Length: 198
Image 1: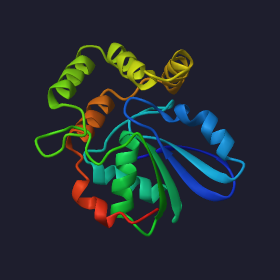
Image 2: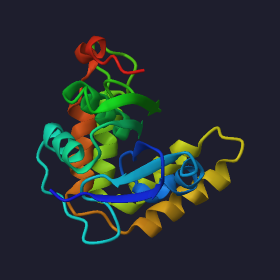
Image 3: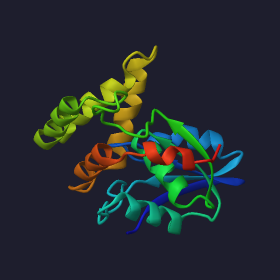
Image 4: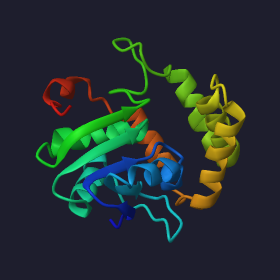
């Protein structure tokens, strides 16, 4: 699997992992600000990006191993939502490589069940999956609107998120479904005690 990684700045290495349905463009302003102090690696998650987006990954471990192979031997990792779940799993699978974690709007399990009431209800998640299958653009707009909901600058945030999607290009046909399968299946609750990075 080939990953697209946008690198800028110098200093200690920090990796930025975007969430479901997004692309690395969402990190543009933050990456530029951080580049004064860090070497910033904004990763296009598999199946996303502007040039020949392709997705051949079949598992979370395959994605993590591709990240580990493509990035420096010691990195800080910042992940948003699904990117945060990938970051936590990466820290668990390759603890010597991941020195620090920054988790934005992330959780060890995205979908709730009888034992875990802190995620999205299964029926809501299933409805979103159906919406994605019917119309990815409409489902992503709904998803972005939820991201901006409650922000004092909601209109500006929504505009920025939409521009990021537009600039990032269309994902590979199977990328949204793969990401949704990860959101449905990832359960890192038992791994949390072994994730020791600050």
